[in-house]
Image 1: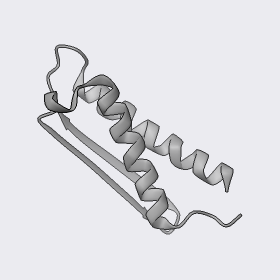
Image 2 (image 1 turned 135 degrees about the horizontal axis):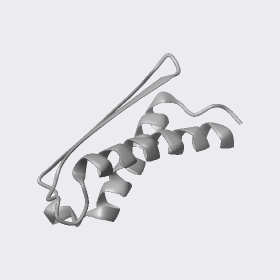
Image 3 (image 1 turned 90 degrees about the vertical axis):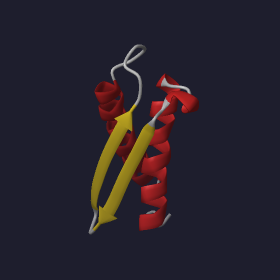
Image 4 (image 1 turned 30 degrees about the vertical axis):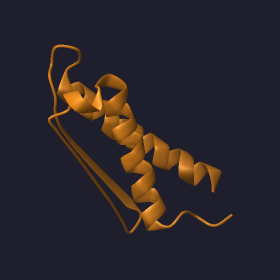
Length: 81
């Protein structure tokens, strides 16, 4: 099986990050979410900015968890290729 293309890698990472955020917060509670994913020359860069209420979960911790989940999802994508 061929390795995934760059677009698939970026989409997989972004979907994983968003999934983590919305597992912690209702979509209507999220004031701003910016998931930036780049994959160039085999290097994955994930940046998650989250502006959400901190009464249920710490937004910074959730953003960090989302970035880790994005990297893990891409690792799995390549393992399955």
